[in-house]
Image (cartoon, rainbow, N blue to C red; front, side):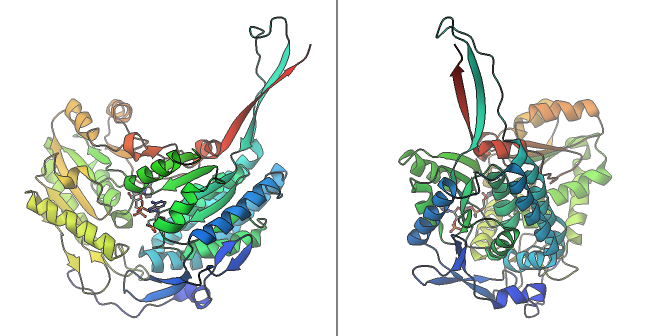
Length: 505
Ligand code: NDP
């Protein structure tokens, strides 16, 4: 495992052309500066070097963007477009994302820190696939004909039916861990397919891919005002969007703390609808009958993929007593193999965490684990004096009340706990405030389905982890959120259902 790192000056690779241009907001189909003229820097988390100056959107820019989205919804062609026209445009966006895969993956790697090879293999094609998938849903804004009785109006005959309509202007607020995939793929694709218009406030920590996406969406033929993108801070741009009375729905992905604050704002305002994708503390369960050749690397990937900056990271490993020592030993060897480095290097398995704030959060949890008496099996240190590299870290001898077991760390930190019986593991698995994901490793079909039913989480991975598909819904039980992203559920969540009674006699 690395204890030192040698970093070269950043190489901008296929992202150089885009980074040489002045960055802009997208409002009403035009690339513009912030009204205030203010900018802020986005930096490379591996080296700390500046990547670009980004216009800092605030209240005035959000208001202009909402006006544009409102006009595009009320008067523009997008909601009225034929389903096949909308489908063609969304499909084209997916194609353009794939055509520009290298550039987008490189931008993502520079801005977020994740390995370029991972962004190229996962973030970018999954985003394109969501546009290709949701393009199909454009043609399914369907209702149904409903047989109704004459109890309310004796003797009357009705032709009664339901219609699905777009919800209107949607405000999207997104985090920094999968910047393009979450903002464009998980959120925008389904929202657009239903005929809504959008104002996006991405995380101010990682913006580059979504700004490049803005150019691709325009190239694909998205009409003016349908997609508006305003980088800015949560307090300012974010709160203006959530409190705006011309916004009909908020789609939010981020922390529980911000999700709760959005609900307060909405409750005090126009009661707009809200979908929330929040945090997690997902259990990953290895049963005595698991194939350990698969389960051990699978458990390591479950936490260390994307530096642990995954909302459904398998951060609590629960291992049957009979295989506990073997699993702990195997995990240690897996962690030792992980190569830390800048995301742009081919050999890098794990890049830096996203910024100084996140480094402080993760190191704070590592210190708290040690203070509370957990045993550090491996890792636990920051690496190098540049960037934000943290060793893959594993804690054993934890108890269920420790902060590192109960709270979301959002970094490369795993806790490992033994269990004795199925009853015990179900109880422990379900004993946090979250319910986003869970893993089950077993060769026994009955055990797999018993646990898949008993564990209360929005996604269950059996003999795999971190598998995502455009057609499968994703979201959380309990404090992990309200509603679902992706799949049919995400499309329907951004529609309203209208009931029509036509009296025939
Ligand atoms: P935050 O909640 O800090 O921020 C998310 C977004 O909300 C950012 O764009 C942020 O802006 C904005 N924001 C902050 N405060 C407000 C406010 N008062 N009103 C409106 N918007 C606001 O989350 P992170 O960006 O730190 O992301 C990490 C979190 O996201 C983790 O908890 C993770 O589990 C969760 N997540 C959940 C996923 C899921 O599908 N369930 C997927 C991915 C991540 P700014 O950047 O300026 O603070």
